[in-house]
Amino acid sequence: MAKLLAALLLMMVAIGPACAVAPTSRADTVAALDRYRAEFAKTRGYGSLSSADRNYVLFSDAMRRVLTEHVKPYDPQVLVDKAVTGLQKKKAETPRASDRALTEAALDGMLGGLDPYSSFLDSERYRYLREQTSGEFGGLGIEVTMDEESGLIRVVSPIDGSPAARAGLRTGDLIARIDDVAVKGLNLQDAVARMRGPVGTSVALSVRRPPATEPGSKVSLTRAIVKIHPVRYRLEGDVAYIRIATFNQQTTSALDAAVEDMRRQSNGRLSGAVVDLRNNPGGLLEQAVSVADRFLEAVDIVTVRGRDPDETRAYHGTSGDLLAGLPVVVLINSGSASASEIVAGALQDHGRALLFGTRSYGKGSVQTISSLSADTGIRLTTARYFRPSGGLVDCFGVSPNLEVKPANGNTDETHPDPATCDANASPPPPPRAWKMEEMCPDVSNSVPKPDADRPLDCAVAAIRTRLTGALAGARD
Image (tube, rainbow, N blue to C red):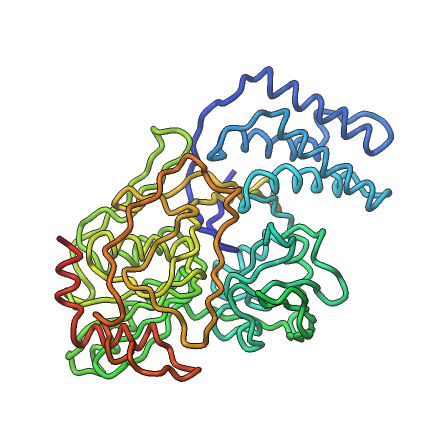
């Protein structure tokens, strides 16, 4: 089946064949699938399930892909356990559920239990992925994930200019109710589906802002066509400010155009650039590599490793630097994830930029989207990625060279549940660190206004006065 390139919640998506290994024998797989057919027939309450049944073929295809492509090996009987749990739950909730509905519930149960990012894509989710990749879709414009501790939906970041951003939602907010439906007990896909709807219709969200323990007042949002502008830019005096909101198919070309325009506006007298990746949830792997390459020479950018060592893929840059060696600061926070972390990590490891802000999210895995049928698919975590220094990003994130907290006092940080992380992974070495007093003393010593952007103010000040020498030191 053809691979579909797409990006969704915190996803870094790759195209091409996933790792092809055989973790289990054919006999073990057949035995597990026979048990699934028996459990399916028992759950629906009549007849048997033929091996030629189209719903069974859909499920068996998905399970075989998990067994051969997922980044971690799984026992096929464990996968059937997860599927049966989904079956039984659906039957209890909807006694007259169709065979197709039961099959999709089984797929949800099996795939949703693998890791936080793998999932079954029904026709609606599959269509949504295609729309989002194109850079325009209908919805609230909010990137979310499941908060394991509370069972609620946690905001990773609102998309610039979206209904969610205009309503004031921000990273770390917890969504407790969608209209009159409690989020607790829903899976992530069901919650996201409830937030979607026709353009022009409204939805009410009950939002809890940590450390508060109770939901605040309801926020009403009107669904709209969300046009993702991947790059916004302006001049801060002689410093180029480049805000990259997401990595979609237009990001690199938009970056090129932004730099060219600011170079023209400044009469070729740029002194440096601030690349703002805060609250950028990621996107397409190829675009992350391409954007990093715009600032780097022919060096390593990222290595993607799956379950099979023979399938390791290394991505390298090409000659040429879009800014011709001008100093660069990259802004990150806990809403910077996936593709953002590729760019930030590569520029930091090669001493091309210093990172200001707070530690990034820590989403260092690759999801491969595969079609199961004309209108359905699966999203599988097929690999993890590593920085040029060899550091693992998954769960550890990327640490800044200079920690700068927001002026508004919002210090809430969002990171993956440690229970989903690899307990045996070695943390990357800490980067060389500076203090605000060293890089931007005037900003550090001033009393910040509530609406001040201290990370940006510090970055601009550092570029103008101190960054060139610091970057040379970072390369040593």
